[in-house]
Length: 119
Image (tube, rainbow, N blue to C red):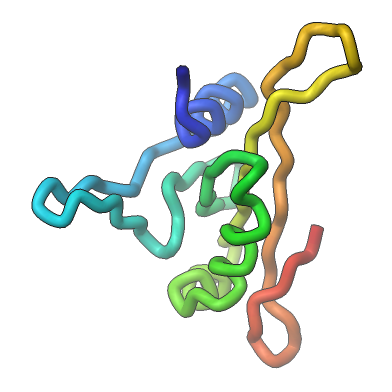
Protein backbone atom coordinates (compact mmCIF):
# COMPACT_ATOMS: atom_id res chain seq x y z
CA UNK A 1 0.00 0.00 0.00
CA UNK A 2 1.33 3.42 -0.93
CA UNK A 3 1.41 6.17 1.70
CA UNK A 4 -0.29 9.55 1.11
CA UNK A 5 3.03 11.28 0.39
CA UNK A 6 3.82 8.69 -2.28
CA UNK A 7 0.39 9.08 -3.86
CA UNK A 8 0.81 12.87 -3.95
CA UNK A 9 4.29 12.56 -5.45
CA UNK A 10 3.08 10.17 -8.17
CA UNK A 11 0.07 12.35 -9.03
CA UNK A 12 2.04 15.61 -9.23
CA UNK A 13 4.89 14.12 -11.25
CA UNK A 14 2.32 12.92 -13.82
CA UNK A 15 1.16 16.57 -14.01
CA UNK A 16 4.73 17.69 -14.79
CA UNK A 17 5.80 18.89 -11.34
CA UNK A 18 9.14 18.26 -9.65
CA UNK A 19 8.40 16.77 -6.21
CA UNK A 20 10.84 16.11 -3.38
CA UNK A 21 10.10 14.48 -0.03
CA UNK A 22 11.45 16.69 2.77
CA UNK A 23 10.36 14.85 5.91
CA UNK A 24 12.94 12.68 7.59
CA UNK A 25 12.77 9.83 10.07
CA UNK A 26 14.77 10.01 13.30
CA UNK A 27 15.55 6.44 14.31
CA UNK A 28 16.35 7.39 17.90
CA UNK A 29 13.12 9.21 18.68
CA UNK A 30 11.17 7.01 16.21
CA UNK A 31 9.43 10.08 14.80
CA UNK A 32 9.14 11.82 11.45
CA UNK A 33 10.28 15.46 11.30
CA UNK A 34 8.82 17.81 8.69
CA UNK A 35 10.50 20.72 6.96
CA UNK A 36 8.43 23.93 7.24
CA UNK A 37 5.46 21.86 8.40
CA UNK A 38 5.46 19.85 5.15
CA UNK A 39 6.10 16.30 4.00
CA UNK A 40 7.06 17.34 0.48
CA UNK A 41 7.77 20.34 -1.73
CA UNK A 42 6.93 20.60 -5.41
CA UNK A 43 7.72 23.09 -8.14
CA UNK A 44 5.32 23.63 -11.01
CA UNK A 45 5.86 26.60 -13.27
CA UNK A 46 6.82 29.61 -11.16
CA UNK A 47 5.21 28.32 -7.96
CA UNK A 48 6.92 26.45 -5.13
CA UNK A 49 4.40 24.65 -2.91
CA UNK A 50 4.91 22.81 0.38
CA UNK A 51 2.52 19.92 0.96
CA UNK A 52 1.31 18.10 4.06
CA UNK A 53 -0.05 14.68 3.04
CA UNK A 54 -2.39 12.45 5.05
CA UNK A 55 -5.51 10.29 4.91
CA UNK A 56 -9.03 11.73 4.64
CA UNK A 57 -9.77 10.77 8.23
CA UNK A 58 -6.96 13.07 9.46
CA UNK A 59 -7.86 16.09 7.30
CA UNK A 60 -9.34 18.29 10.03
CA UNK A 61 -6.44 17.73 12.44
CA UNK A 62 -3.81 18.47 9.75
CA UNK A 63 -5.62 21.63 8.63
CA UNK A 64 -5.90 22.83 12.25
CA UNK A 65 -2.23 22.03 12.89
CA UNK A 66 -1.14 23.90 9.73
CA UNK A 67 -3.21 26.98 10.63
CA UNK A 68 -1.27 27.42 13.88
CA UNK A 69 2.19 26.40 12.70
CA UNK A 70 4.63 29.38 12.65
CA UNK A 71 6.78 27.59 10.03
CA UNK A 72 3.83 27.56 7.61
CA UNK A 73 3.33 31.28 8.21
CA UNK A 74 7.02 31.97 7.47
CA UNK A 75 6.84 29.81 4.33
CA UNK A 76 3.82 31.70 2.99
CA UNK A 77 5.49 35.10 3.47
CA UNK A 78 7.97 34.26 0.70
CA UNK A 79 6.75 35.38 -2.76
CA UNK A 80 5.50 32.62 -5.09
CA UNK A 81 5.28 30.10 -2.25
CA UNK A 82 2.15 28.14 -1.41
CA UNK A 83 1.07 25.58 1.16
CA UNK A 84 -1.44 22.76 0.71
CA UNK A 85 -2.81 19.83 2.67
CA UNK A 86 -3.43 16.81 0.43
CA UNK A 87 -5.70 14.10 1.83
CA UNK A 88 -6.40 10.77 0.17
CA UNK A 89 -9.36 8.42 0.51
CA UNK A 90 -11.13 5.75 -1.49
CA UNK A 91 -14.27 7.15 -3.09
CA UNK A 92 -16.87 5.89 -5.55
CA UNK A 93 -20.51 5.11 -6.12
CA UNK A 94 -22.16 2.36 -4.12
CA UNK A 95 -21.56 -1.02 -5.73
CA UNK A 96 -18.81 0.37 -7.96
CA UNK A 97 -15.05 0.13 -7.70
CA UNK A 98 -13.57 2.60 -5.20
CA UNK A 99 -10.65 4.72 -6.43
CA UNK A 100 -8.08 6.74 -4.52
CA UNK A 101 -9.16 10.39 -4.68
CA UNK A 102 -7.34 13.49 -3.48
CA UNK A 103 -8.83 16.44 -1.64
CA UNK A 104 -6.59 19.53 -1.66
CA UNK A 105 -6.89 22.39 0.85
CA UNK A 106 -5.00 25.59 -0.09
CA UNK A 107 -3.63 28.06 2.45
CA UNK A 108 -2.70 31.74 2.29
CA UNK A 109 -2.15 34.79 4.48
CA UNK A 110 -4.74 37.42 5.35
CA UNK A 111 -4.07 41.17 5.86
CA UNK A 112 -2.85 40.51 9.43
CA UNK A 113 -0.43 37.86 8.08
CA UNK A 114 -2.35 35.03 9.75
CA UNK A 115 -2.58 31.65 7.99
CA UNK A 116 -6.06 31.05 6.53
CA UNK A 117 -7.72 28.45 4.32
CA UNK A 118 -8.29 29.95 0.87
CA UNK A 119 -9.75 27.00 -0.99
